[in-house]
Amino acid sequence: MRRAMSWTARPQLIADPALQPTTPLYVVRTCNAGAMDANVQCTIPPAGGGPQAGGAVQAAASFCSSGSLISTTSGWIEGSTGLDDPAFGRLIAQVTSDLFPTTWQPQPGIGFGVGVGSGGWSGGGVGVGVGF
Image (cartoon, rainbow, N blue to C red; front, side):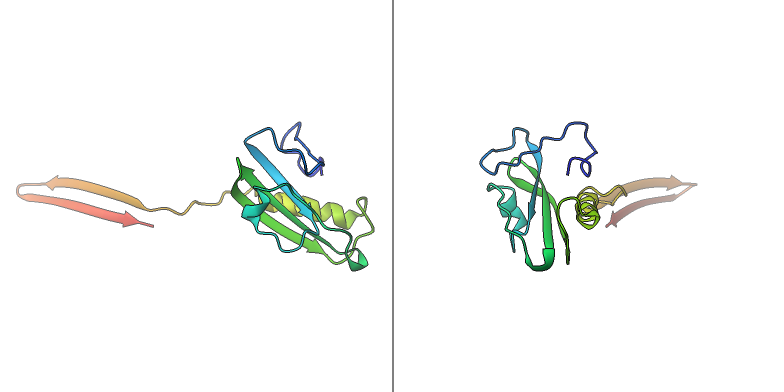
């Protein structure tokens, strides 16, 4: 996991669910936890599940700020032989990449603009625009 989270030199990794993050921004990861609401994942100690049949793995990750959800993603593989399995490593890397995409995504919003103009002898104008 530390390799997949190479966006920071020293990520705080907490393996004990009883411990709480010491920074306002943190990532919560769980494996095989079943259907867990991402908002809940940011507010309670994470608890993963046991091994699944055939080595299947469900991974979920949430980027949180002081208990509030910023971003979430999940993924799965049908089979894995353990933590050193390259398929498991690719799953963790993909979930991390999806949680923190490297491409710029425009934020939705509304813009408003007003323009005033004048022209020649007797011309004038006012313009209003709204953009989405």
